[in-house]
Length: 149
Image (cartoon, rainbow, N blue to C red; front, side, top):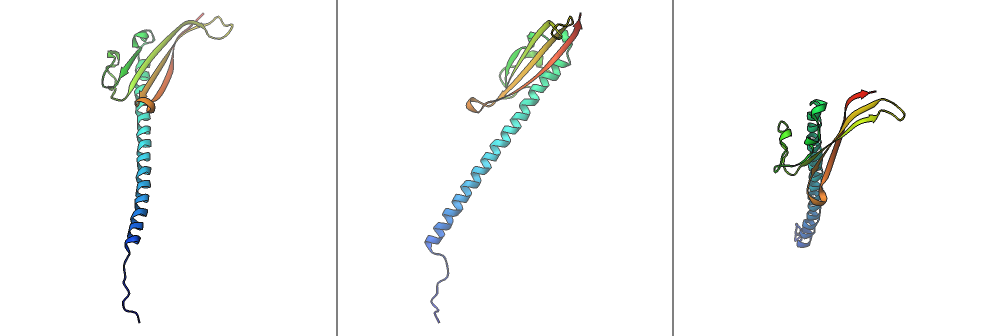
C-alpha cells in the first residue's frame, strides 16, 4: 500500500479555477450593467412621455381661443421654465421640452367642400440624455374649433 499520497490542489489548478471564475464574473457584471442601462432608458422614456402628456392635457383644458403661439417654448430641465406651465410638475435635468402650436384658419374640410374648419396642431417633444445617447419623445394632438359655411 502506498501511504504517501498527498491530497489537495496544485498551484496550477488553483490559478486555473481563479481564471475561470474571473471570466464568469466579468461576463456576469457586464450583463448586469447592460440590463441596468436598459432599465434606465425605459424609465426615461416613460418620464419623458409623461412630461409631454402633461402639456397636452393642460392645453386641451384651456379654451380654444386662449391657446396660441405664446405657449411655444423650449424648457431645459432645472434651468429654464415657461411661466405659462407653472401649474405643471417642474422639468428636471436632463430633460428638455419643446412646445409648438400651429394654427390653421378657414381651411376646407374636404376637397371641393364649402365647409371650413379652424384647428390647431399641438406638438410636444421631450428630449433626454446628452450627445450621442440623446432620445426624443414626440407627442401631438389636434384641437378643433368649429366648422363654418
